[in-house]
Image 1: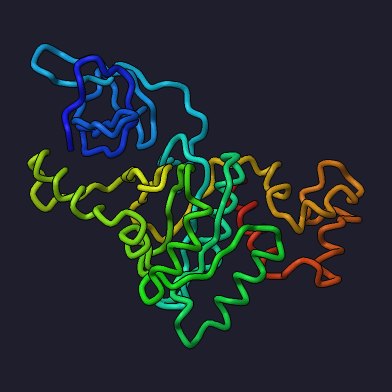
Image 2: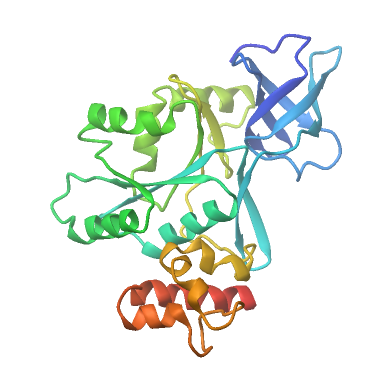
Length: 298
């Protein structure tokens, strides 16, 4: 990591460690910076204004307006994952077993943040792919962008398939533990481990690792944000009135309901429930919707 030149005033936040942040300018020059005053309003991906003291210490004075922000909310607590990203890449695999709700929730979070989404079935070399492949096909039928790869056994092919979706875009990588997200990161950013080790040494962190996201510059252009592993994707921050519009199969028929404000729960002449009876809406997806509505109302 090179030193920032003295005239640098704008940079991107690439990592956060307690009261310290790592920032990088447009040429890839980076340094450690601290936040003046409250630090809770800074997240990975933010573009920030810096001032440099006589000793070379960088201070974050302010964050510039965000083009996008993606978050998850568990109960009353909101967790910002990244700012200024163009899309989210959701990684799942047949083993050790994926949770469809995690993927569906991540897709809804992307919709709420007005960013794109890519669903990636990893480890497609496994023999027991029937359920995972059927799930990927369902996502594709709903209009989502999908991809099936093996980052470990088919590295070259996987990288070739991924790069057209990632090049010159900033992408947040998410997935449950064991889905192969770290393998994907190392495939796309070969020196990611070295960068992390260098950062730990520079900050004197020893074996401590960040519990937040980390932004990496892609060699081919764009950036990849690696998020910490988590098992649930809370959506309490979303508007329940817009939830049905974010589910493609609901949105196709919702305008045919008797009531304009139909919530597709118990109202008469509901086009969504009629589609459910005709098996045009997956019962599991409808049950998922009802569960989310209960959460958002609570």
